[in-house]
Every structure is written in C-alpha cells, then in structure tokens.
Length: 570
Image (cartoon, rainbow, N blue to C red; front, top):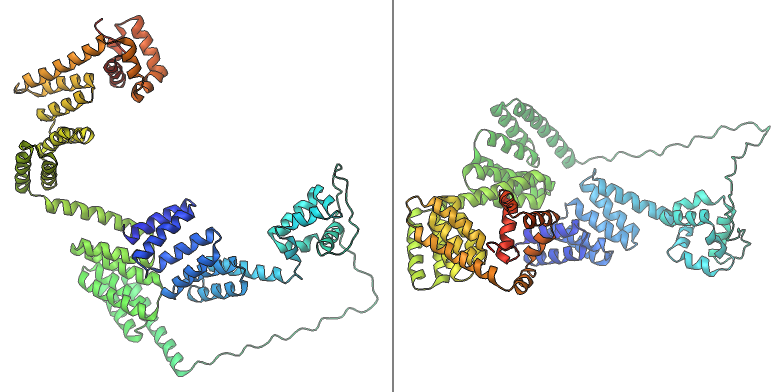
C-alpha cells in the first residue's frame, strides 16, 4: 500500500481509539515516506494517547524539524513535554506555535493548561501531597484513616486531585488542615466522626464584619504603570512595512473587482500589488483565481507554481500552499490531464486536509477510472481475445482461457458472450460462485441470451439446488422462442427430477440428518413463520399452492424440498 493509504488506515484506527494499531500503520507509512511531517505528527498523537510521552516527543520534534512553520507540530511537542512533566519546556513549545498561528485554539488551551499546572506547583508544594498514593497514606495513618469514612472529605480530596488549586477553597475546614499536617508528617489531633455515624457537617463561616475603627480612611497610592518603550524599526523594516501596506491596498482593490467579475481590472490591481511587494504570496493565489475564471488554465498553473515556490522560501501558511496545489489540480482537470490533477490534489491534502478537496479527489479518481475503462474499450480486440479463449477452452486449458475472456470483458463489457464463456471455464474449475456471477452478468446484459440460463442451470444442478434449477430451466424455455435449445433444457429438467426423486425415496432418517447439518435449512426451520406454514401444508397440502405465490416463501419451500425435508408425490 501507499503511504497515503497507510495513513488513512492509521487515522481510522486512531478514531476508533486503537492507538497501537494506528502506530503500526503510521510506522509503515514512514518507512515509505520519511519526509512526510504529518505521519510523525499523527504517530506522536497516538503515542501520547498511550501516555508514551518519550516516543511522542521524539516524533513531535521530527515533525517540527521537517516543517518548522507548521503550528500543529509545536502543539504535539507541547503535549509530549507536558506529559513528561516538563512544564516550562511545554510552555515554550506552545508559545513557539502561537507565533506561527496566533489564533490556534489548541495551542492557546495547551498553554493555559501548562500555566495552570505551573501555578499549582507554586502552592508551597501542597498540591503534590494529593497524588495517587494519598489514599494509602491516609489509610496507613491511624489518626487519618477515620476520615475515609466521611464522604464529604473523600470528595474534597478527589476535587484537589483533579485540580490542586481547589485546596484554597477547603482550607477553612479544620479537618482539611489536620489532614494536611498528617500528610506532611506533623502530629495533630484529628477531629473525626465514628465510621457508623453520618459525617459531621462543617458550616461555611460567615464573612467577618469589618472592625470599627476611628482611624481616618487612607486613600491608596496609585502605582505608576511602567512605560514600555516603542521599538524603533530600522530602515529595512520600515521599507518592508510600507511595501506590504501598498501591496495590500492594491490586493483589496483587486478583490473588490473580482467580486464584481471585472476580471481585467482585477488582474491589473493584482499585478500592481505584486510589483509593490513580491513577498505577498496571497496576491499570486488571488490572481490565479481570476485566470481560472477566464479559462486561462495553463497560466493559472504557472502562477500557482510560482506561489508555491515563493511561499516555501518564505515559509508562508501551509493553507496558502494547499490552496495553490488545489487550483493547479482543478486547472489540470479542465485541461483533461486527470493524472496530474489527482497528483496535485494529493499534494494539497498533504499540506492541509479539507473535506472539499478530499471529495474532489475522490470524484476525480472515479472519473479517471471510468475514462481509463472507456479508453481501453475496443470491440474488435475483445472479439480476438474471446476467440483465443475459445481455442484454449477446447484444449482444456481453462485457467489460460479465463485470462483471455477477462481481457475480452475489459475490452468490451457489453458483450454477454464474454461473461458466459468465462462462466463455462469457472464451472470446469468448480469455481461455482464466480461462474454464477458471470452468468448473472450475461443475463443482465441480454435477458434473451438462453445459453447463459442453461449454464447457470448446470451450476445450480451441481450445487444440488434442483428446484431452483427447474425454475430457471422453465424460464429458459420461455426465452427460447426459436426452440433451439429445447432438448438441452428438457434433459436438464429430467436430471433434476430424477435427483429429486432419489432424495424423496431415500432413507428418511439419513436424509433429514444430512439436511439438518445445512445452516440454510436450520435457519428456515427455526423461522416461526415457516413453522406455521409447514403445519398448514401438513394439514392441507393444497395450501402449498397459495404459499408458492410468495417468491420469498417459495424459495424457502424449494430449499426444503431439495433437502428432502418436504416430500412431494408420495
């Protein structure tokens, strides 16, 4: 499989929370394409989900090294460092990502979580006392263990474990202070309730009233806000800023003209914008949109290639690069270059995966498959392949004949003879399922093609489905308007009747024993509806005629007749 196919499998496994399988798929994909930063990022996420943070960090750093301007790589790195307890380093990773993508919600949340953790670490270390082993410490301390019977204290301990800063809310509870002293190894008298009694409820103290004072109220002295000196830009920075402002002004004018569908005017403004600042890559992608609208697809491709080359040098947003690849793909599609269109859609998805681009790729792949099929179609070559297959069939070289008939089908899948002849080969090789499918395909193409009916009837006979075989032979007789195959059809019906008669006259016990080993027979007999119908048929044999009018019931009754469960003519 390709790296993209393995990545897709990995993503599915990750979504199903099968992280170990996901890691396996991503690892195989990396063996094929070790330069794809997304693969390392996805594997990092899988490792982190298994709390294997060392491996997650290694992959995250690789993703960042391959694509330093990709914000998600820093997010993966932050998660791994956070998991390893390296909070300061995790914060730096999140901050580095936010420099690239300031509004990234995941990076913002990650940084906030790290800062909260760092703040909790600073609470005198008290939060660390409530680690996973706190229950063992409390239970092993005779003065603290009675607290485990008090549900409100137990809940408070759980709250602090979930959020160490919650300790501030519970410090007014004297039992909590005693608990802290005990956990720190200090002696204290613990006020507890008997385990069999309801825990004592400690009321929250009312806020203290301000003490009366005759001293004059002092006005707080305002603290002067520190002035932050403005950083002076050098001449080069000033020039860059001026160029970008001029470029953006023309770009906005071009956008306005584009919306009005004044394409010539829009192109002039975009050209002016690019002259003003040749680092403003968005100008090129906007210009390519205009060229696409007016049908200049080759020029669109050239401009987009320029945008990609310039954008990579300047490390612009990967979404911009993805947009340029997608427009190259749509241009190639318009020009009829389906293979190049598919290739560029894949490049776009590698930069930034969007549902719209993915849907376009899938539709294009279907279109190319159909185009390839039609391009390969040649009825003359199909006939030649079928004739070669016929010669091989006569010489009993059935496997080689199948290859030729398959080639004939590829060259012309509208000729029922190709399917019928291949079915004959499959039947000789006892590949009855494939043979039956080919007969069905031939009948679907030409419902009057009697030979296909006869071949399918032979398959049903071989499968000991005698009643179905008889029904199909009767249908073949109706289709055989010129009565060319009457004798062949009648012979097949007679063989079926003889075989059914043998079953009917066989030993009842042995026949039923064999029949009950058939899963299909077991399922029919276990059906309450069929049980009722069989009882009706036993009481009144004429009831069978009414039930046979229902195709589904008729099929099940034939199966039971075939198996010898239902006896007829006795």
